[in-house]
Image: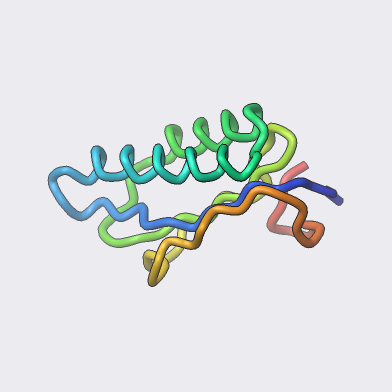
Length: 104
């Protein structure tokens, strides 16, 4: 069981336009800055950076859910649709995470 603090973010990872890769890069940089501003640790941000960079492009419209803690990504899920709005990133103590969805 992981205790946190966790950094979590839910965002549009659609790859349905010619400039999708550039748009995702801009979106991620903005979200990353917001996480850093909320106090996310640099090693946790680095783990999220690696997860975003390593993911293959989504097919069409899609979303992504990422949760990281202590330098490890503990949840990385593609969503079948983008979130209706990007959920404000959170960095801090949240409910403990455990179960089949998590690594570590």
